[in-house]
Length: 358
Image 1 (tube, rainbow, N blue to C red):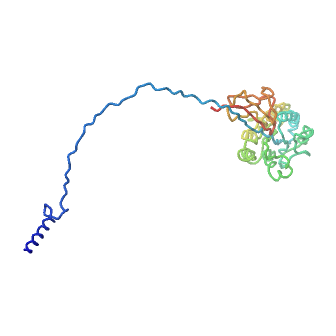
Image 2 (cartoon, helix red, strand yellow):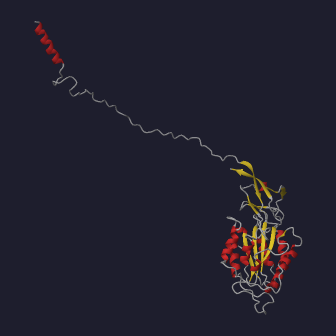
Image 3 (cartoon, rainbow, N blue to C red):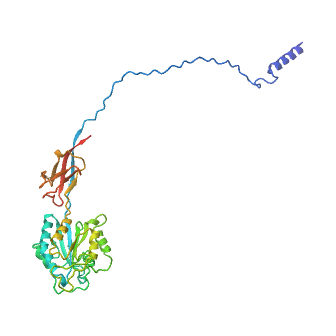
């Protein structure tokens, strides 16, 4: 009996360990029972637009804020070194006299322009090696009787004969060592403009291209200051030359065309005049005007209210006056001095004015 009961229990255990496909529990394909989905209807409604009038917003400019601007500028120094290169040949006797006769007018113009000058004289003669002439080698604003000193420095024997007239080369020698620290040491100032003025009835016969000498002059003041150096010439007109007054009847009286000097003058922005003019005054006045380094126009940094502008020079109030004061030019936003008054060399200018911040 016990044996039968045991066999029955074993059979029941084996039956319970098998699935419906005869395998072990968990090894058959599981097929879950899933209920069918239930869908609910969705109602689509048109959008609702609120067409009621909204309140308008007015955009206004912010209020203007008045402000004061002060511009401070400095006048140029007005310093110029003037080197005269004078032909010392005998044929130039009359022209040298014309030059000295007109020198006082040239000097007056420099003084009127408030130019602080150094004036020296060299010859075109190669034998002089570019050294400054005279006992008083450098004429300044403080030199007593500068007219007489200039006459002495430009006087040569009337019978002088020059074989090698090398004006351009003499300029180079005058402005380089050993002359700069030797006989010409008091002439050239580092902060001054340089003007070379050649007066001759013959063209230059220096070795080398005149463009070389033009580059030499323009390089003297350093990069960015090329325009501070110039060469002007009073010489024979190009292309045919000319006869100085009263010398038409003389053999060899014709002044040679100054091709080389004119080339150097053109390259350096100088003035070209004729040695055959009855007077050199017009040419000398042009040269003097070109030597004026004082500024007459001073731009403002902001657009001012013209009624509020005040101008002070070295602390002194300058009136708004066409002749003896300043004017404001709206088209250039500048203060200008076009009348008799020009701020002096090195002066400190103060421009104060109101402007509007938008």
